[in-house]
Amino acid sequence: DYVPFEIDHLQVVINPSPDPEVISIDIRPGDYSNIINLNSKGKVPVAILTTAEFDASTVDPFSVIFADTSPIKMRLSDVDADGDIDMLLLFNTQELNLDESSTEAVLTGKADDMEIIGSDLVTIVIRGKE
Image 1 (cartoon, rainbow, N blue to C red):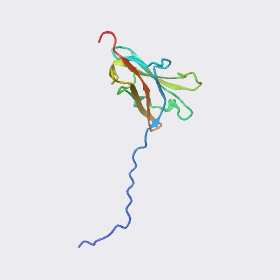
Image 2: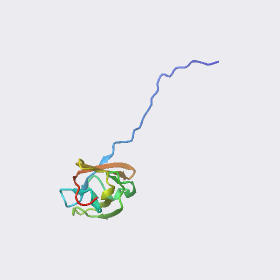
Image 3: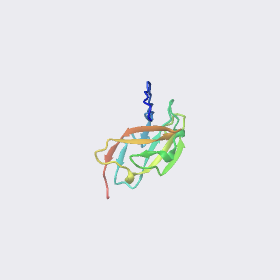
Image 4: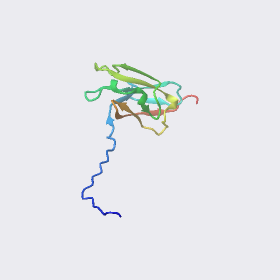
C-alpha cells in the first residue's frame, strides 16, 4: 500500500556558472588600427593585460581561444609598459574565424578556474595572394 504524502517546502537551487570576468585585451599591442590581413601567413599578437583588478599571469594559456583559434606561442612580459606583467599570445592569422565584415574579435579562457572574456576592435583587410 502507498501512503500519500505532502511536501510543504521544496527548494531547488540551480547554480548556473557565473558570468565570465571581463578582462582587457589588446590586439596588435602598440598598433591602434588593429589591422588583420586575412591573407597573411603571419601571426597576430594579442595581449591579455594585467590591471588593478586582474592578474594576466593567472590565465591558463591552454584554455585561451581567440576568434575560435588556440595560441601557438605565449610569453609573459610588460606589454603596455605600465610596470606589471601581461600575457602575450600569438595566433596564426589564417586560422582566425574572422571575415571582411568582422569589426571585433573575442578572446575567452580560464584564470584560476574562472571564465574570462575580452574583446577588441579589428580592421579586416584582404591583400596579396590567397
